[in-house]
Length: 210
Image (cartoon, rainbow, N blue to C red; front, side):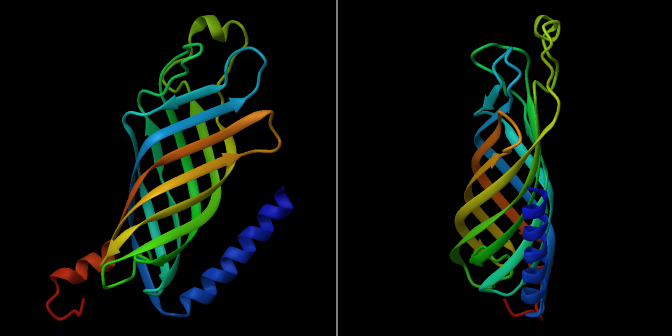
């Protein structure tokens, strides 16, 4: 898996270099709202590994783009907090959090560098770190040997939405897995909002051509 991952990273870096030759660059932030998430911890044969949430799942972090109006390459990372995440089968505590690091190819209106409003799509992948029962783990489960350490998943993500002059909004699905674990997967479905500060700053500049 490490060899495959290194090959993917090298391919993405080469693609990023090729796209950057088009000469546009953006820096900004991404905001997410999971409409549904579910994390399945590696099996410990004691308690259910599942933890999910459909309420108050908020993410925030930085994002950069290189490329052009029709296509760009981006890298983003953020902290995604699920305040009320829990396991329905055997309640052990509250909360979940994940930290995705994702490289994506963005097309059309989701390039983050386009001037005219249009629809577009994005697709990419990366690594995500996940932790459940964030606030506390029930003593009864802890005494039985249950622990909730952060675990890693390899993720793929696809999205579709609309973008205009530094702003993009999309619906996305992200799935993660780790073949080294029995269990150990993640699923995030939600909305993502991207802000390219460089493009947005030109809206107020009368000398710029939008």
